[in-house]
Length: 241
Image (cartoon, rainbow, N blue to C red):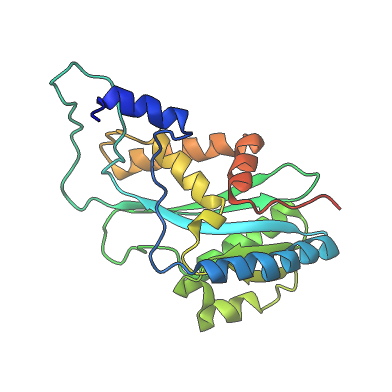
């Protein structure tokens, strides 16, 4: 039997299929380790948050250059839109953010931005002391203990970072996500939403890009419902006491 494309589409819809964009998963991801983390570590995190009346805080980093993410847009048939971008190494915006959650309280977004323009001796990314300073700022703003969850990046677990976190930060408890599990970090939702809003943006300078990025992030800070959606997407939802 022969079917046209439209007939195949109708048959698949009747069988419960739909057109979807695949979700990327790292080949190195260990499903058993993720399942074990959800079964053993996550309940311990919830218990710690309740016992300490703490905020649950997720941390992650991202970056953006003057080459914007591409997105669909309208154009006349046969005329592909062209976004002119610089081909030179003209700097980068580095970002570190915390998505903060606590039952009965409004979700918060706290971030820091580092703009490097390519000048000699300029810091090219966040270092251990920058992460420690960001956590200190969160502690002051939230005015409570913090249970931190972040990934296994080298700068999160090296000797320098461990020493910084163990120095006069008794208000901090740290847990790590399983390897290759960005889908369990709601801060990834922040980055996806940010980059979608920056799609096709042809900024002329890195300062202009930084200003636009800061504006987008500030708008997200006022949208607790959006942050809650990022958290719900991970499935790591704190149940009320």
